[in-house]
Every structure is written in structure tokens, then in C-alpha cells.
Length: 416
Image (cartoon, rainbow, N blue to C red):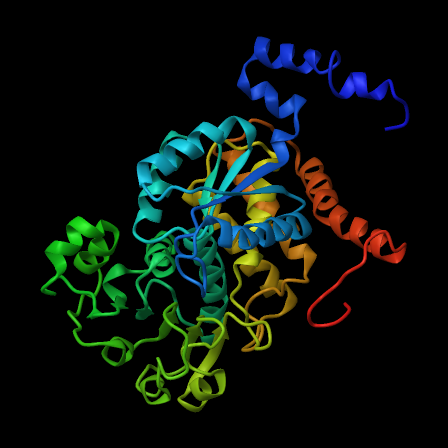
């Protein structure tokens, strides 16, 4: 504000101008006259917070605040943390749908399984803005991107390899879906939950049909060889194992890795301790190992996905988030890393590689325009200039503030 008169522009009577424009031209005009075009809601009922469980909305709010900071710092997205005291799936959907006019996109977070699948599918159906569940789509995106490059290194094809999925919660159930979208053969996928390998003859399969139809679908259409048993049996003869289960070590044993095919790929993503330590997987014969941790090579981290995906959909004001946009993001990440030079210890970009976010966001935005899902059409150069500016701007502001002592950083781990 430079003058007292500015207040009359920001609020009454000046604010009536854009209100009238939106009322006259329809809801889409709100993207032109407000910051809705860059607002994303980070919404959760905190019934399944990573590493903490069902801790409730108030206790889970810091997680949503932290996620919102990542949205801004990595993607230039103005994210708003919202925790909802509602566990009923239909009521949760109602609340989110009612909030839609305030936002350009929705990020669902830390919702218990299997309700999270129903909530996502229902909101994708009824909402006129992109809806994304990071525990599902974000995890799947970075896994697909990493696997694409890992398979290139070992000269294997996604449509031919045998894949073991250890864990059958939100992450791996969603990954199963997107592996199929990317070209994997479901008959070559063997999934394991806490009770053992999923297969059509398991005693609880009919109950699963009612309680968790998404897991039921995996049980009846995957595992073409009819493998039974547990993790050991699922991994035998596999080319790839992707684990999103409980913290280890010892959930996966190096002796089981030794029974995988030559040039095995092991993604062990539990935090803080992976299902198997990377060096143990290597001792078992794995050629490529990835984890969820930043202190080991090949970190599979959702933060490589959601900031850029939301940057892309918000920049073109997309109406939906569909599988084709998801795949475009995954392959953009993979291509960027490949151009940089992939090898056994670099299959994915690192979180400090800003150019990867620009490429990924552009791929999502361009696919939205191609599919007719964008409210806004832009040339490639216009798109790149705007996305790059929005992604780089928060880092410039943070540096400026730190350099001039406008803000001070206090950390329990010492000064930054």
C-alpha cells in the first residue's frame, strides 16, 4: 500500500468491479479477477498421517502447513492448508465440493484407505477443477518415472518384466493402476498385503470385494501364475520389487533379493527406515536400489511430482486431472534425468534441480491443452516463460529476505 486511497481499491467500493464482472460472465471469470488461478487447497482429515497414523485434524495441521510450503517453494503455488473434522466419506466429499469456488485445484492428503480411493474418484467425477491425492497419484508418478529409467539401464521392458508390490495400501494400489496405464502387464504383477499374496482364491477375497473393491480388483486380475505365500514367494523370479510397507529393516531380506532375476531393481520406500538397507539389497544382487530417503542415491520423493503437476494445471487453469496428464508428468521427469545422464545411482532428478519442475509442469499443461481441458491456451514460449518465472520467484524472494535479515530462520538442527 502506498496511499490510503489504495484501500478503496482493494476493498469497497473498488472490489465491487470484479464482483460484477464474475457475476455477469460466469464462474470461470473468477480465474481472471482473483487469485483463484493460483490457489490450491491441501485438504485432509488426518486419519492416516505418514509415520503417525490417525492423529486427528488439529495434530495433523502442521503436516498440511509443511506441504503448503513445499507447494510454494518448489512450484510457486499458493497452497492453503485445510483440515476437516469429518471421517464420513460422502460428507468429506460434500465439504470439498462446497469449497471448490475458492480454489483452482485440490490436493487430498493423509486420508485413510480405502476411503481415500472413493473420495478421489467421486471428487474427480463432480469437481470442475483438478483433484489429486498425493498419497496415490504423487507416489505413483515418481515411481513410474524412476522405474522407466531403471529399466532402460538394465535393458528391460515394462510390458515384459515381473513386478512384486510389497504393501497394498493407498500408494501401491494406486501404483498398480498407473503401472498398467504406463504399459505393465497385470498378469506379471504380484502384490502382497499384510495377509500374504493377493490372488483370486484367497479365502477373504469375497469380503475384500465389499470392503475394498480396489484391492479386490488387483486380487482377481493380477498374478497370472497364481503365486501364493508371502513376500519371499512374490519376489522369487521378479525383475522389480517396489515396497511401500512398514519400516524395516528386515521386511525384505537380501536372500530374497538373491532369488530375483538378474539385474534386479529394488525400490524400498518406507521411512524412516527402508524395508531393506540399500547395501543389503546390493549384497543380494540388486543392480539398482532406490529408497525414500535423501541420504541415499535415487530418492523416490513425492515432492518431485506434486509442485510441478499443480504448477502445470493451475497455469492453464485446467478443469480436470486425467491419466494422460499424469503419464506426461512421469515421462517428463524421466526424460530430464535421462538427458542429464542416468546410471545406477541417478535414475531420478534431485529435488534441487529446478529445471526438472519446469519441464514437468510444461508437460502437464501442454497435455491439458491438447486434451481440451484447459481454460487458457498459451504458446510453448509463453507457457515456459510463465512457468519458469513462477517456479523461480519464491526462491528469489526467500534469498532476498534472508540476505537482508527480513526474516530469521530458527531450526532445532541449528542455523541454515
